[in-house]
Image 1 (cartoon, one colour):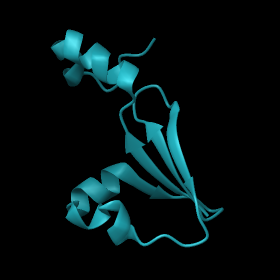
Image 2 (cartoon, one colour):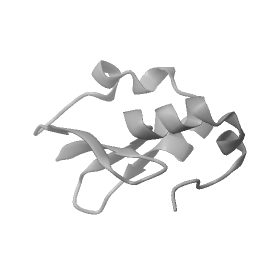
Image 3 (cartoon, one colour):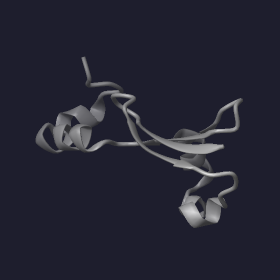
Image 4 (tube, helix red, strand yellow):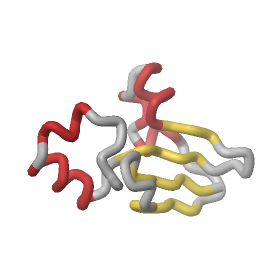
Length: 76
């Protein structure tokens, strides 16, 4: 099982935790609302947990161009 952090905009893998067993509490998932969990976390058939986040490049693009926040995707 792995926890894979992936950018929600460019789908670049931001990080990965390879572990046999990791408690969600140690990752801070318990502070998310149910809606946030549904939006950010998916459970893959192979047992991996995929967490949507934002990479540094996309965050910088959002900071420079706040109008991008209105778009579902701003990566061409």
